[in-house]
Length: 150
Image (tube, rainbow, N blue to C red; front, side, top):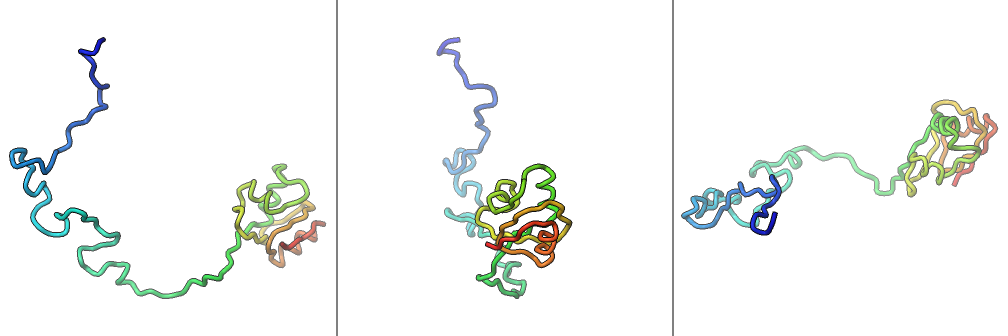
C-alpha cells in the first residue's frame, strides 16, 4: 500500500444524495425539486408543531378547562411496605431520612416526601421526612419507632 492506491474504507463514503439547485443541466435545477410557489418552496420554511395545513389545529379545536395551582405542593409518596423491604435487604438499620431515600432512588434530593400507610412495618425505625399519613404514623409508633416531621 502506498499513496497511489489509498481509498476510503468500504461503506464510509456515500455519494448517492441528489445535488439539487446546481443548474438546469443537472436536471435538478430551477425549483430544486421543491415544486412551484407556496410556503414549502420558500427558504426558511419550517412546519410549525401541530400545523394542519391551515385547518384549525386539534390543540385549538378542543375546549380547555381546569386550572393548575402554581402553589401546589407535590409529595413523593413512599409506603410502609417499601420501608420494610429496605430493612429486609439490609439497606436500612434504624434511621430513615431523606438522604437514605435519595441513595436508594425512592426520592429526588429536592422532593418533598410523604410516608403512606400501605403494608405493615415490623422494624423499629426513626423516620424523619416532610409528612406522614395518620395510619403510617400510627403503624411506625406501634412498631416502636419514632416519627420526626421536617
